[in-house]
Length: 231
Image (cartoon, rainbow, N blue to C red; front, side, top):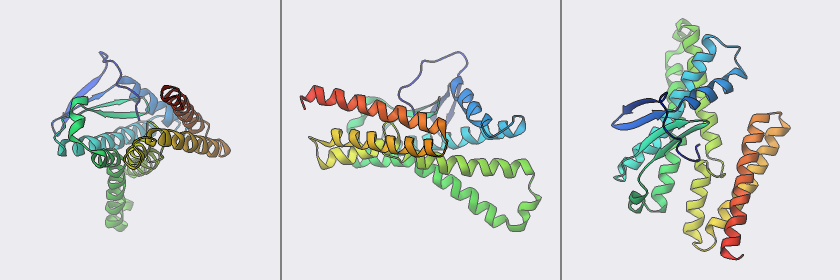
């Protein structure tokens, strides 16, 4: 979940995976640590949490990127802040219709669900042998499942700029080219406000602030869009 690609820094981690360039901005590590500190005192447990977040979100963005490759698009991945971004040259967008864009957006959460399912199936298949696993490996696998399912579900909520918001926009515009953007932005405001309210009710302050800001961002974008169209 990333609004824009951050500028490069001398502390970026750069590598390639399946021929796709990947850049990890230092803010990614810092935010992952901050999120982990809420439930971990530190030490090895916090390190395992950061590893799980890195692997899960990288799998998420690789899901987007690999489907883009299926459409002949050559993407690159940036991990930053609260998530990541699979980017590509805007000129290549003409190769993908609205349904292709839906597939690209859905591929991220779907990849995380597949990762979580693979871990769960592997643990089930191990049966009683799981008791022989090192405790820290069990903890890492638990973190991987939790992050993958939680992050995947959150990203499917129809709020901009999450994947669910992108999917809602494509479907709404395909159904109504004239009013689709307005409808999807309205849905984003409502969904974001509901999630923020529920998170606050359960004292999930960070989640409440995040979705509150996303809802407000969608609201201001909706007002600007209406003014531009004279509605």
